[in-house]
Amino acid sequence: MGFTGLALGAMLHRDGVARAATAGWTPPDGKPHFAPKAKRVIWLFMIGGTSHMESFDPKPELNKYAGKKFVDTPHAGVLSNPLVKQNLREVIKGLHKTHQFIYPMQTGFSKRGKSGIEVSDWFPHVGECIDDISVVRSMWTTDNNHGAQIQFHTGRHSLEGHFPTIGSWVHYGLGSLNDNLPQFVVLGDIIDTCCGGVGAHGGSYLGPEHNGVQLAVDTKNPLPFAIPSTGPEDQKREFELLRELNGIAGAEYPDDPAMRARIKSYELAFRMQASVPEVMKFSTENDATRKLYGLDHDTTRPFGEICLAARRLAESGVRFVQVFHGQNGGAGKWDGHSNLKKTHTELCAQTDQPVAGLLKDLKQRGMLDDTLVVWCTEFGRTPGCQGTNGRDHHPYGFSVWMAGGGIKGGVTHGATDELGFHAVENRHYVTDVHATVLRQLGLDPRRLEVPGRKRLDIDFGAPIKEIVA
Image 1 (cartoon, rainbow, N blue to C red):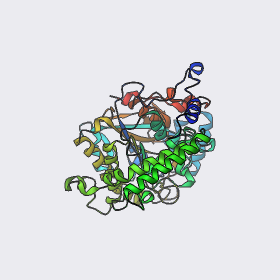
Image 2: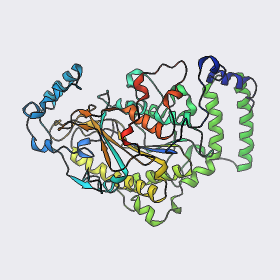
Image 3: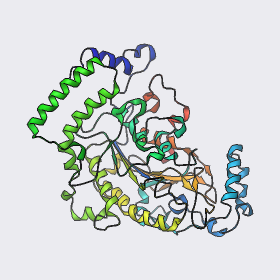
Image 4: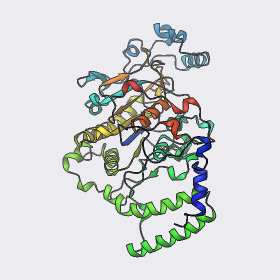
């Protein structure tokens, strides 16, 4: 490609190979650091902040003290918990004043599966899969606004700048399973620019070649940005010319990451023209599979098609499929400041069957064993009422879950207090989820660190070993 001489030497030096002898560091070689338990990840993100108390963390005490002031309940003692530091005590005191009346749970919970784990009645289909799921009920983060969306994907507060996302780290660390498809794909409408936008699937200092590739789930036109205007032979010759010209430019500007990414994107786009339409060809699926994802109902069809596309991409060799639900041109549909019962009922109805269908489909195909599915959101909701029928942002305790890829099934881990206010048992910052994902893929985040980029210890996270089989 014209890179072999000048450019290769510069690239190797920049990537650290030339200085490895003195720095003791080598760039990723595309191989796992140790035996992986998962080959791929499907990452499901609910935009806006799903209420943990109406999904996977039942709190009957909310019903017992409904309408009472927080300070008048026996649970006001959370302020004396040694895990609650002074600055957080002040925040909690403030929330007690603005959201001082306890708001009851807006749905019931039922014990599901052999494990008997309680799951919201708004998630009956996911509840059927609970014996394959590990629920982590003790998550916390630091952003009390929707910058928490990008924080969940990068581990850093949005005010700290731009950092690589979990999908980009996976892309950076592992080789491709299919050279005709992107290694990191993004499905669904991404989070809004108010809350990070493309930064939620960006490579940042790892380079633009590690960004997620957005694909439209459109069976008629899945690749609108790469429709060929000429025949295949003519197009092949055009790409050969582009490769030669880009190679010349690459030799002149060997340290330009945008140039490297552009060359790779041109070549990948050419190969994708044949592979992506095939992946999006849902007509090859039988009726039972289509019904499993809810493609036969208007409510579930949109997200069902996205989840089916995620399975087909994973099956075809995509390493990391990042799925978004709930874009509304702002903070997200799951942001239940008001009418929480109405909106969460609708959103759960849209996603419950498709997500469960994904888990069941992966399992029946033997793919769940090496496919890690992560269901997550940026934070939970307040135990106290906002207005008359909503809950505010709540970063101090919330829930996520994982399934497949070497994760235990039918277990819960961690806990919030009796009112769901504060994560008090086995607390986990968001990068612990990242560390768990990387561990299951056979990657050590400390061995991925780029020289010259100082990372905080919390950036690396710690695998949640209690949920690993």
